[in-house]
Image 1 (cartoon, rainbow, N blue to C red):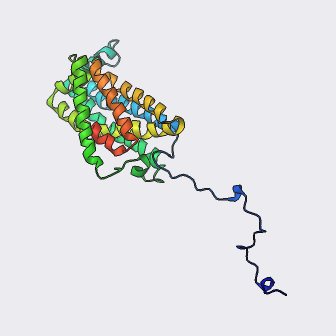
Image 2: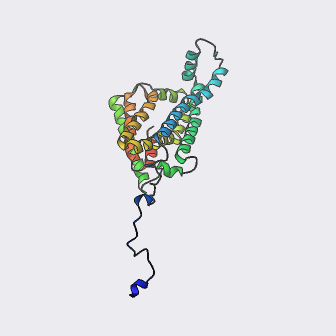
Image 3: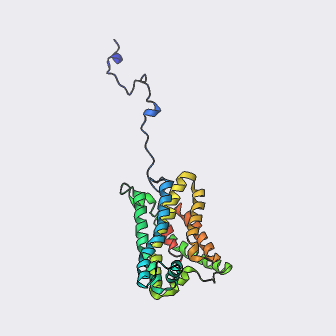
Length: 266
């Protein structure tokens, strides 16, 4: 008997064995990140809608007790008119509304965190794409912020921005309101808006319909929410729209850059 026939059976060299079917091969799922988020469009829209509700109703929690203290009669037929006048002309009422934005921002962040991490299942920063692509991006973000600020100033000069806006009225109402707005504009508002729009919304839309459509939808929604603040200054709104386009493009290369660039808006 030939010696080869006495060797033990080897499944590695025996080509007569059938190859495993494709369905039996274990497929590795793509990694979870900002381009493959663990949330869908429904969850993103829900967080966006709830963030708007918080901005609308949390200030009322602060404002209504002050209105009661000022003697506002809720049974009066002119209640809504008097309440609106108090909210827009009374210095303390304006300050309370500005201060109320801080808890509204914190609650919005809690919603974003719950959606992005699935209540702690995924790391927040990595999943939402909060990272620097290279060590040069922090410096590039500062430069981009300066350039965007210069372009925005040019647009407002060209189109015109001499009409008083709601934001300017709040800033000019009192020094306390001015400082509170400055604090929010630097430490909370840029982060929350980027988390919601170019974090949660853009990621879900990009996964569903591609980056181009996601960019247009994000641009529209981001500009729309700033209309009450800057109306009727079309120049300022145009600058906000340009800012949204720039930050969405930056979002594709390094998400963290967008936040620090956005902080130069004011």
